[in-house]
Amino acid sequence: MTTSDSETSQPALVREYLAGLQSRIIDAIEAVEGPVEQGGARCVTDAWAKAPGEPLQGDGVTRIMEGGRVFERAGCGFSHVRGAQLPPSATQHRPGLAGAPFEAMGVSLVFHPRNPYAPTVHMNVRMIAAGHPGEAPVCWFGGGMDLTPYYAFEEDAVHFHRACRDALAPFGDDKYPRFKRWCDEYFFLKHRSEQRGIGGIFFDDFSELGFGPGFAMTQAVGDAFLGAYLPILESRQHTPYGERERTFQLYRRGRYVEFNLVWDRGTHFGLQSGGRTESILLSMPPLASWAYRAEPAPGTPEAELTERFLQRREWL
Image 1: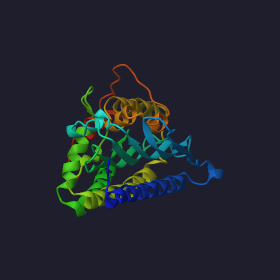
Image 2 (image 1 turned 180 degrees about the vertical axis):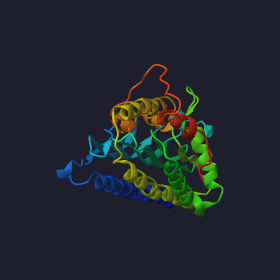
Image 3 (image 1 turned 180 degrees about the horizontal axis):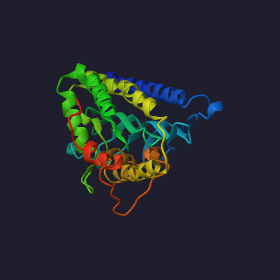
Image 4 (image 1 turned 90 degrees about the horizontal axis):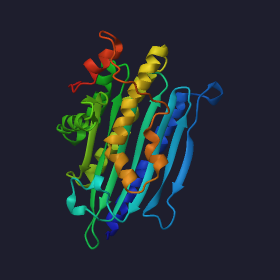
């Protein structure tokens, strides 16, 4: 790709923001874990760089916590890579860029709390730029956040969606309903005809605002994450639970694994482009289970999850 000085500065601005966002989020979840002497875990920092000569070049930092007091597994990765050919998963809406050199960077996280009453959460913000030699690169953004509860509460869903709506409000009244619908459609297990969770917001291949406003909107989403999730986590993490709730949590985590491996475009992009597998799969829970045709008994909280919450609804 050929870039002007102004275009060259754009990736630098995005990288600086993303690296800072990752640090802020890690600081926050380590604070939730509490002191190490009281059983609180700390994130391992794994900085990496692709070896010279590999098809994909670049670097990143994977921050991951395992076996914590609050978080059974929590991964937050930053990556900045360049490749010779844009992968197929990124060209389905931009066929003219098939085979073009590209640059991609982003922060992606998935947190799996230990307590079944505390929901799993996902957030991602990213930028991709691509262009054929001799052409100005095309830059676009993507991202969003979504919540996957195992035992759902109406007030949690409302709080999460309100935070998403408020983050997008400065960029137009159309953004929240549009990105909320996009999230519902994207985080859907087609092979089971089932929503992954209670949704949130999602946008991809987004360039219609131009670089400045598009980057500002992406920053607003990233900055809203902690306020959207931490109050829910803090209100649920001490709820008593037993073997029944734990068994159901692991069963529902199996659905999470299915979506990420079968349908998630970000996972496919990373694997197809030759990305770092350990970092790409940080979203996997440490434990999950599957059961043949398992169906919760009518009238139970487990049945309520699919009947009331894993439905496309207007939460606000």
